[in-house]
Image (tube, rainbow, N blue to C red; front, side, top):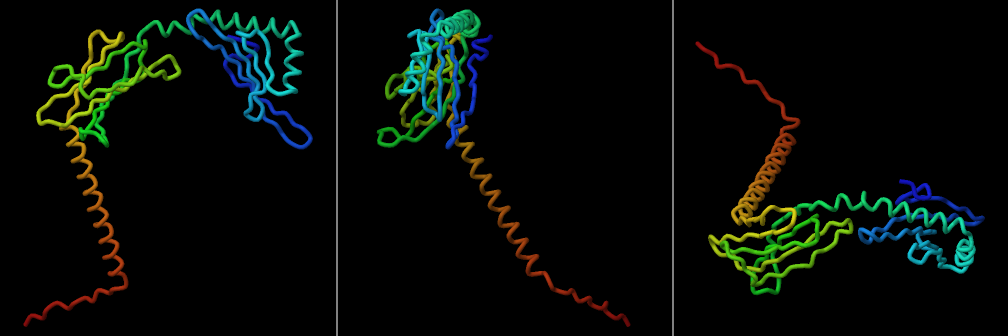
Amino acid sequence: MRIHRFLSLLVAFVMFSRANAFFGYVEVQCLYTSTRDVIYMEKLYINKLLMAEYNSTLGNYTGYTAKMKDLTDEANKVKKFKERAKKNLDECKSNIPLVFDALTKPVEPTVKLKLVDVADSRHPSMLVCSAYGFYPKLIRVSWLRDGKETTTDVTSTEELSNGNWLYQIHSHLEFTPKSGEKISCRVEHASLMEPKLYDWEPVVEAERNKYAVGSAGLLLGLLFFITGLIFYKKNSTGRTLVPTSPPLHS
């Protein structure tokens, strides 16, 4: 796809004056706001400052400094510039099916369940169930305690956009751990044939902590062994072994 030789690419260029050097680039974009509407934009930056832009919703060039305003006013009078911009907008529109084809299929969320400590709460612990990278936006995340849905001490974020047509959401359950209690996070989404359960396993957490402590102890023991070996070799350096004579037999 070609839009003024560039589509969604950064075109870098360098301009030199007598005293200083200036770095600038042009950003060309097709912004798809829906399955029907597209905005075509060209933006000119110099030393990271936006100096001028073309926006298809306005249909002209806009300058943001006195000199750039003069230049864009002249550019708006040139018929070829506007014809080129309109042609680029039409090319953006022609690619709507290609852009939205991937979004006609639901994308299954990646779900992570973790335990965190909370401060200033009547409960000592909190579980966080996070669903990442799903589409479409509509999703339901709920909590089950021993198989029964609970809404007590539950808070959730809205569906948050990742900026790439995918979404994420985070649900929190504050609780006081009880021996033998089973807690699950349930996720319902268009990408799933049926609701999916993610169980919190406190035993796994305890085992993980035990292995972490065991590994730390092993490393500490190894450190002491290496230190002792170095100390022994250091002290044995320079010593001469004196051979002993075998006992005389009569």
